[in-house]
Image (cartoon, rainbow, N blue to C red):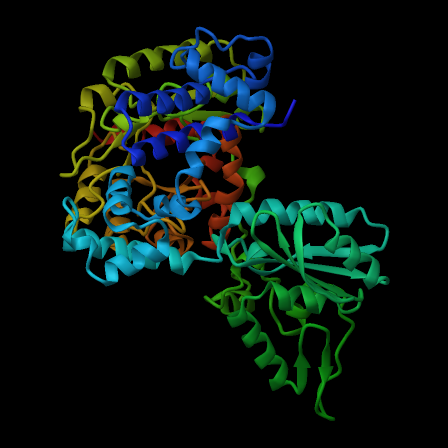
Length: 581
């Protein structure tokens, strides 16, 4: 049977729905495909098994016609209906769905009235002022579209750190097993744990450069070879990410690793320090250039280079020339938080709203990761697009959590909600609904276009509610897709400190919000961080890895991160703010 995953089937159904809407099809037919995709997201059993055993029948949201299409796609790997539908439109049409604010209805109008079928067409139509004249658009919409196109262009060629980390890890794991490998590491912005990357850097030391380079270029992830040398190779991976290999001797390895890790600004400082001593520092060596230069001791590790210049070892995440040298010289570098120090986490969704796992499945996955507690924060009713819970459904979920907790030993589920912050800063649930919960995540999911002053006031008002434990994804950004909304971050930090509200570091690699660049200021103001995965499935808990990377870039230690506290201590901490009532 062809290897077609449930996620791939869901993507096909959603694409069919989008194209049908562009085509102007019956709304009920369009909704059927959206409902089918949602039904598959909610499945607990393996889709392939259900198809083989003919058990799709009777599943709510999947009628007979849709069942036949899903079965065809799963069993053959193809769906003629989808292929025929796609063939009716230019292949670049799907690019338009990446433009912020452009939905199927607007794309339909652009396609039918202006023959806009690609990003290039859209750019020209806006520049020619044709979009503003369409019914339902106007000058303001045209301006927003141009802004969105600019964002896409700015993000072109960049990839989320999760994409880079997965590919880099696979390459490293396979090269590590090669008999000619001595030492190896990722480099560049992947090693520094930046939120987005342009390409992957791999550094390997060996006595046989040709063998390592050949193994790299012939790796199954490689789509094409861009450059093939004995010590330098560049390839394009099948996921569209470029990967560069640098092969060096083991004596050169510490210098190559430091150089190719960067950042450029960090390396400039180090090279300047070397020049001050009469040395030259590059990707291959540290060597004297002046006759009276001090003698250079043997260098075996990156750590030796830092010690030679009088610094404590600087972790890769901190190498941005943002004060790390001063702290390293004064022995004041933080002991950065580690993944294994997390004891639990709070912002997680289940099938009750827009998640894909049950309470029991999420609890089991958390325990498998070694966590002591897990918070459930399904959406509130205002997030209707995410099947948000009303008060009655939330009350039932809280009771279900209490029932499950009776069977746990050394583990606990906490009952919470991701409560929408309304436009005026009020909350989607009254205090009477929030009061029985263990905690509340308050988040913005609408009205992103408010001015900075109004948005800041909105967030501060929400934090002033004693039932709000933490503020979710502070700026609302979606990396490479949606910019942050306007907000005065320092003012929000002041309010968080004053109200005792935790600030979330949303670990979803699409968000990583609050941005790592603000966490040192937050720490100075006494604001506590909570690293949350925003998990919508059991595998979403793995997002904690990326949250830790962002926290480390923000100079945070385990003492700065609330959910490094064990179960025995976190219960009282969650209740601290509410106790002020």
